[in-house]
Image (cartoon, rainbow, N blue to C red; front, side, top):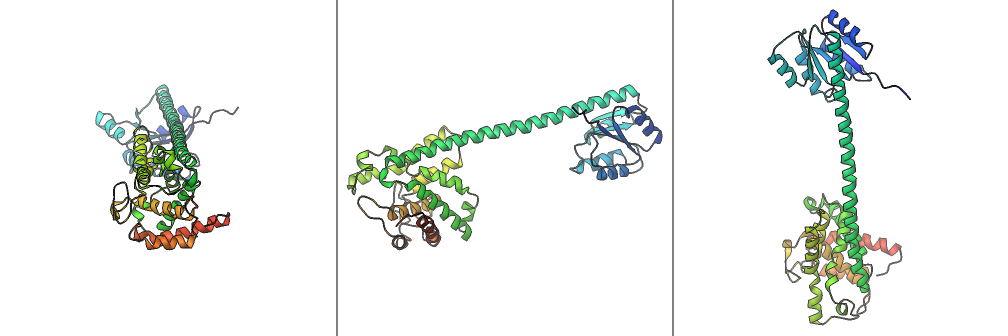
Length: 364
């Protein structure tokens, strides 16, 4: 087992007598370096491989005096944390207050007694060790707390995305819809960023988080009757009205979860997409009949992904449409169902999506 490292002291005083006396008192307990000016101190610090644990600094010296030296130390981030004890023959409260206000940790009067000097140094070095230990504990406590928070948030997201998966398992007619729309949305946002469109809103978004949030866009379908949700054919007008309610219900579900959760961005994104992905640019959508720029941006983006996937997917009442035909249909709805300023970027991202899925055998 190696012995503890000896503490390093730097002593600065313009009196050779004081330097020798201090060195003789301290050399058995510490590694002592002496210098006769503040200039020499800074030269020593610049060249030293191991900074001193403590600086003992005379106040009254030829320029720079001790006050100027400590000001220079505190302005340099490399040296600012080295504790400084003033050695001084000056007496008076004003002198001590000035030194302490500049950052000194203690004052020792000259001429000093050996026992007092050793005791004061030992005390200050113990305080320094305790401060360093507290900093270490705080850093580790913060890390532990952050790890715990990440674990809790991760668990919350897992539960919430599992709810989205359960909706999809229940609505087996649209199997894979949640994953595909999430991928489509991620590609869409990436394309918009590359084009500098809505950079003020999309620039700071975590696209991976956004993709996970999108899994809850149809969570309101939990409340829709099986006879409607699983009907192998077109819905009657009355049934369609009930189906339309899933947007508002989904938004309400997420709001209730928000009231009991510390999550923020994840649920805010999910709430917007759940409540607004069936709104239309021309105001003929639901549940609020919003139009144009009044529709939240994430709702407008989710609408593109949702409709695209519905059209390329096979349903009991329709066949899957080819990718090119889907884009043609959606392009004709630009300015009616969809935000026209987003259409070109959507088409580009849909092409990337189609290329990815066609490589793994997806048709449509």
